[in-house]
Amino acid sequence: SPFLKTDFIGKNYIHLESISSTNDYAKEIASKAENGTIVVSEEQTSGRGRLGRKWVSEKGQGLWMSIILKPELTPQSSVKLTQVAAVSVVNAIIETIELNASIKWPNDIIINGKKICGILTEMNAELDRVNYVIVGIGLNVNMNKFPDDLKDKATSLFIETGKKIDRKKLTASIINNFEKYYYIFLKEGFEPIRISCLKHSVTIGSEVRVISGKNEFNGKAVDIDNDGNLIIEIGDGSRKAVMSGDVSVRGI
Ligand code: ATP
Ligand code: BTN
Image 1 (tube, rainbow, N blue to C red):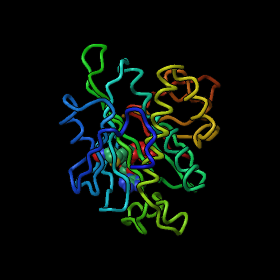
Image 2: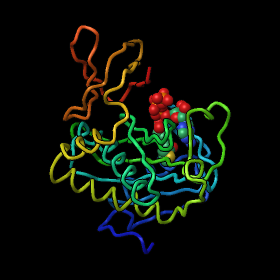
Image 3: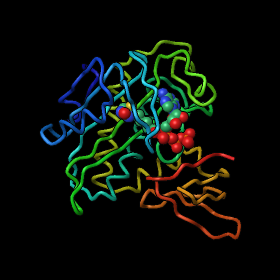
C-alpha cells in the first residue's frame, strides 16, 4: 500500500477472504512468521472478543486484523500492547475521519457512547519470556446495521459519518500509528502511552461497576497506573487497582 510508512509492521501482509478468526490464524503461523506480520480477513466466521465472547465480523464491512509481534518484553508488559493499540486506533480515526473517538478502558474504542472497535491481545510465553504476541483489532467501518442485541451498543464509521470509508487508507493509518506508538513504548516505556490513554479516556472520572468473576463492586475510576491497571476509588475513599485481563467495567 502506498499509504504505509512503516519500518517493519505490515511489510509482510496476509490478506484472506474468510477465516474463523484472524487471531487464530496468526497464532498458527506465529512461530514461523516474521515480526510485524499482519493478517487481515474480509470476514471472520467465529470472531472472538474477550472472555470468549462473540465478535460480529461481517464480510467486507470492517477491518478484522491481527498483528504478530515478537518483542523482547515480559508477559506483564506485553499486556500493555492493548493500550498501545487503543491509542493508535483513536489517533488514526481522528487523523483520517476527523471523528472524535475515545477509549473505554482497557480495550474498547467508543464513538458517541457506542462501541466501534475492540482489541484482543493474546500471547504465547514461557516463564518470563514472550515468544509472540498477537494484537487483534476489530473496527466497524462500513456496516449500516447490527444484530438486535448490539443495536444500542455498537456503531460503525459509516453510521457516524454517513460516508463509506476507504479501508485501505484507514488500515494504513492504524498500522503507521501502531508502529509509532510501539516504538515509543519500547524506548520510553508505558508513561507516554498512559498519558495518551488518560487524555482520550471515557472511563476516567466516571462511576463504574467492576465485575471480576464473582467479585463485583462500584466506585469511581480515577486513574490508570504504570502497569496499565485501572484505579478505582471506592466508598470509603480507598483505592483498588483492577487488571485488564478478567474484568468488565460498566458505566452506571
Ligand atoms: P462490555 O463492557 O460491553 O461487557 P467488554 O469490553 O467487557 O464489553 P468484550 O468481551 O471486550 O466485552 O467485547 C465483546 C462484546 O462486544 C460482545 O459481548 C458484544 O456485546 C460486543 N460486540 C460484538 N461484536 C461487536 C461489533 N462488531 N461491534 C461492537 N461490539 C461488538
Ligand atoms: C473485544 O472487544 O472484546 C475485542 C474484540 C476483538 C476483535 C478482533 S477482530 C480481529 C481479531 N480476531 C478476533 O477473533 N478478534 C480480534
